[in-house]
Structure formats: structure tokens, C-alpha cells
Length: 532
View 1 (tube, rainbow, N blue to C red):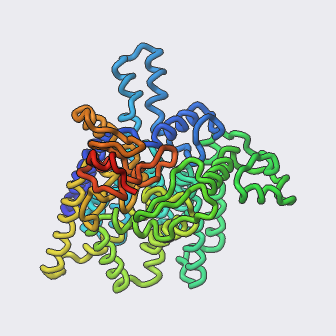
View 2 (cartoon, rainbow, N blue to C red):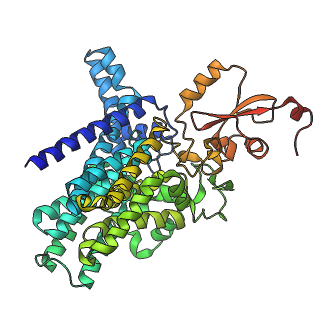
View 3 (cartoon, helix red, strand yellow):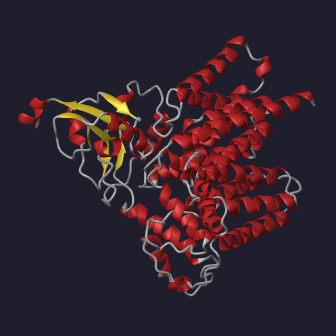
């Protein structure tokens, strides 16, 4: 009992630490490129106008953003009823809109804890929670009005409840798992892959004849029915039953895939049991990915890919490189340590209903976005895989009491290294890169876009320019003196503005401003005789 109380106390302290870390980042960070769009679509959802043809790019926006929009919708209501003007102003601000995402990050920390507790015990569970709290990418995207953190919560939470169903296939667990899988679908269009994970897990269990004795065919069928019904019900509720049962032939699709699907004579007359904006979102997300209409060029290790060219199919190594440079080195080492522990200690059946579910989900995310997606614009697209990494890394802390001093010292060193590495960037978490990037002034040579420059340091750059009026911001052509350029223009990711890539080819930055802006000093002689 005493041990449980201590574990609970430690968990509360860790969650409090997480709340402080996330809140400071949310308060300090400038508004990023996509947050306004997510916030506006969340307001549309709350006003029961979920259609995606409103002005703006709502292709991949999701109903979960209504949580972030809620304070801003409540504020005018309070104002009309003569509540405190100061309170109304606070509720309308971006900082409060970020609060639901911060709460989602706390929920993820708790889910990582319960996953690791079930798999490895109390000590490793606390270690997993700490690793999750110190993960720079999870901190960064746990503070924004976007859907990436919600997606991670949806994946980790729904797989946890599905695991409980696998181990104890009761009606209650069946309902909880079905609802969790359905709720995960309102976080990201790609959350549909969770049903593939569930199907593969059940198929493997059936193939090996290792289903729990109480999971009869009847209960398996009941689970499938509940999952399907939950999916249909939740989707219709969050989209306000907007044009549910519209015939497939009446949709206005844009992407090649859905247009071809619509042209199938047998399918055209089928009434779709989902609201119109649901399929509309999948279609427009697919079309956006094919045409690159809403995102910039794709950049990796100094090479630029034209997002609007049909001949460009993405970089197959994009997410491998992103993980290598953007995930802390000690966290990568602990993850590999955890994999080795599983190889030595896990039987296949226990693995399938445990770590196997998490690793299967992470693998599908990694493979799909590496090989089948052209929208390679940030490590945030595989954020659930980073949460999985912290759970698996917890296996390294199993049987800590019986470990040698050398192993315990190694674990302590890795955790300390992780803390120091993250602290060296804090509170600027979006541009975090690990120690493989020896000179941070050259971080733009590795990655850009939302990995480095997502508008998060605008206030820092503006303050620098105010104190240094001689500095020229994003000049568009070579000029003498001190030039400040943001990473996306410097690399050519920003295809909407003239590129300053000539600076990157000729000069070395003097310093960084907010990590995503780079300061160059161009001599006067180079203007008189410009470089070729």
C-alpha cells in the first residue's frame, strides 16, 4: 500500500511538472502557421457548420478543434450577459485556446504511464512518464491549437482499451474499445489506420489459435458491430448529421481516388451513412496531398522537392532522418534498449497483446508517411510513434533493483542527458535538434518547415529587429549589411515568396535568432561584385 501511495505521489509530481513545462511553452510561443485555421474550423463545428467549403484551407481540419475553440465561443455569450470584460478578453485569447491541448498532453502522459505500468510495473511506468514529459517534440505539439497531440492521445488511448478487450473480452470492454476507436477518428483523417491495427492483431491471434478462451466468435462479432456502430454514431454527432445518407454519386469529389470510386456504377446509388463533411475531408486531404496546394516545397538535407510537381513522390528517408536528428539521442538509445529487453523476455503471445499493438501502429505510421505520402512537412505527422517510443523505452528500467551498478549508472546518465539536452532549447521546443547537429546555426541544412520554422519565434525576431534597426528582414535580393532570414525562405520551402537560398550557398550565418531565423553579414564588396 505504501509503495502504491509513493508511486501515486510521484505520478502527481510528474504531471504537475508537465503542466508547468507545457504552460510556459504555450505562453511564450508565437502563433504558428496553422493554428488560426484549426481554431476557425473548431468554431464552425461549434456553430454546426462543418462543411469544408468555407473560405480557408479546412481540408484536414478535424472536429476535435472545437475543444480549443470553445473558450472563444463562450466569451461573446458572457459578454452579452455583462460578465467581466477582462474575463471575456482572456477567454478570447490564443493562450486560453491552447489550454485544451495542454490538458491533452497531460492525458498522454497518464496514458503512457498506465501502458508501461501494465507492461513493466510501477518503477518503469514512472520512468516512461518522465521520458514522455521530457520528449521535446511531444512538449512542442502539446501546446498548440492543432490536432497532432489529440491524434497521439487517440492512438495510445484507443490501443490501450483495445488491449483490455483482448485480455478480457467483456461487453463493457468491447463498448469502451469501440467508442475509443471511434473518438480517435475525430482527431486526424489518417486515424482510420487504427482499424487496420485492430484487424491485424485479431487476425494474427486467430491465425495462431491464441485468442483468449472467452473471446468466442460471437463476442468477436459483437465487438465488430459495436465498433462499427460507434464509428457511425460518433462521426454523425460531431459533424451535426450534416447531409447523412447522401448518395455517393451526389458528392463533389476532387481527388482521383474518390472520383474513380464514385464512378463505379454499383456504388453511385449507395447512401453513405456518414455526414457529408467526413468524406469531403478525406477527399480534399487526398487532393491536397496530390497537388501540394496548401503546403510548401519539401526539404531534406539540403535537397528541395517541388511539392506541386507530379514527378516528385517525396523523400523515402524523410522520417528516418527526422527521427535521427529531432529525437533526443538518449531517448533513441533507451528505445533500442527496450527492444532488446523485449526480444529476450517476451513470448510472442504476450508481445502481440502488449508492445506489439504499439509497435504495429508506429510502424504503419512510419511506413505510410515515408513511402506513400507527399506531404512530408514535419515529424509531427508521426507524433503517436514518438509516444510509443517512450513506452517501449520504459522496458529498459525493468528489474532495476537487480541490475548491476553499471547499468543503473547508464540509465541515470541517459535520463540526465535527456534533461540537459531539452533544457538547452527550452522553451523553444519546435526547432529542437539533438547533438548530431553540432552547430545549431546550420540546423537549416538538415530540416525545415514545421520541424524548424513554423512561425513560433515571430515575437523573438520582432524584438531583435526592434533592438537592431540596421538589420534587414528577408530582403529577397542580396544587400550589404546584416540580413535576417527565416529558415523556410532560406531553404526554399516557402514557395510563395522569393527565395534567399543564395545566402545559404554563399555565406555562413553569424548567429540564430529564436532558432528559426538566421543572421548573415554580407560585405559591401560583394554587392559591387556579386558572386556567381
